Amino acid sequence: GDVTDPGGALGHGVATLTATAPPVWPGGTTASASSYHAPNTGDNGQPRSYVPGNAIDGDTGTFWNDATPATYPATLTITAPSAVSLPGITVLSNSDGVPVDYTVSTWNGTAWVTQAAVTGNSAIEREVPFPQPVSTTQVEITVTQDQNTPQGEYTRVNEVYPGLVPPAPSVTLDFGQDVVGYPRLRLDGASANDPGLELAFSETTQYLTDVSDFTRSDNGDTITPGTDQVAVPATPETW
Image 1 (cartoon, helix red, strand yellow):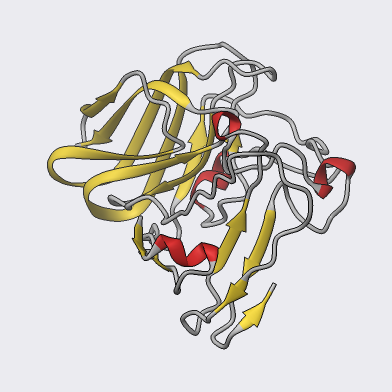
Image 2 (cartoon, rainbow, N blue to C red):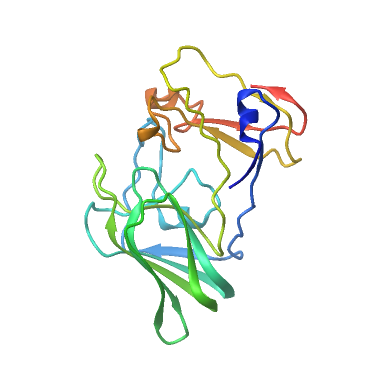
């Protein structure tokens, strides 16, 4: 992502993070899948669904989850009400369910055409460019291998964006040792739409992901869904 003066996060100036708003599918777009997991209460005791539509709802906190671990291929099909011009797509997955190997195909009116093949992926957010822009009403992602996690090899896709979206800007602070206390953020302000800021913590950078090692939501607390989140106001604030 676009980060200016990251040292500002340590009090040496002001760190500025600039994100690009992702494109959205046209109204009436639907999603279907080869399977999806039954609803449950998730890891934090709160009701959660895993329907295919979660992958196009614009909410990065929801995701499509296939029904059975290590069962391939797992497919997600997105259907728009009218043709969309796509230079590629961006797949946002889950820190404990990253699709490793998959193909992306588009519908040409009579058949599926493979536009890209991804292998050995480990990125939670992955831009998948096409050889050339394609006008299509349907996109299909076919997963043939997932990340192996303690929960099993599930396919998890939080969002599929109709276009190429640069990764969200981020700053990693490594204190070099265990520290005791709590963080205090002095926010200088943001654009008027109150953009979100997520904070995740880990004892080591080896295990640092977009979800903290342990958060209040792991105890069933509804304050945060897996990590601390801040809606940054337009005016200065201390969090």
